[in-house]
Amino acid sequence: MNKRCPQCKGSGFIIKEDPVTKEHKGYPCDCRIARDEQDRLYVKLISADIPNEYWEYTFENYLSLPIGTSLTQKANKDKLDLFKSLLDDPNKFMNEYKVLWIWGPHANACHTSLAVMLATELLKNNFKVKFITMQRLADAFVDFNDKKEYFKNLETADVLVIDDAFDSTRCSISGEYTKIHLFNWIRDALTANKKIICTSKVKVDQIDVAFSQSKNLLQKYARELEIQGSLRTDSNKLV
Ligand SMILES: [Zn+2]
Image (cartoon, rainbow, N blue to C red; front, side, top):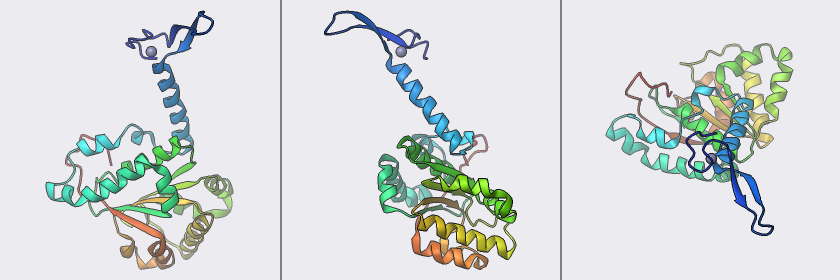
């Protein structure tokens, strides 16, 4: 409850007269309703496995950060407008996309934060989301038979966020088995009509040839959103 709330002075309730019975009754204050809504969102963010360092960032935060140069910002303009339209209407994402591939060559470009912003809007709209890093996913395939619960849990999601997808600078994936499992898993997810949001430093065409099967699939289904520029300070944790 907000102690400085002018309406309820922090009690969370306001007393109003019932228009019919003329009785005075306690009603939850708007600040309490907003707080309850926020708490419900936190529960969803936790069950989506979204790391809490990303929870508080908004699109407005992102736009106000010193990211890139005026040139890269100009290059990003149309893409960010498109991205904003998905934040405003998450159903548009669910209806029109199979894979959204948020990428850009620069480090600290806030791709993960952008992916989480969309994931958060999807959670607010009661879609089930699971956040995974590519490394974690690849490691799970190594001992596939011990990870049945892990994969079962991912199956419950409507939307999968894969951070650092096929980004060889940020994850190491070796072994033919892993690569085959990975391809099968992505193919099955798309067949089951799950939506996938990926962040990566590389565009789909640049995915290492070692993942050619997955690459072929992604070339077919991914819609790419290139966001350029690096955050020009180390003081902010947004990555
Ligand atoms: Zn209040």
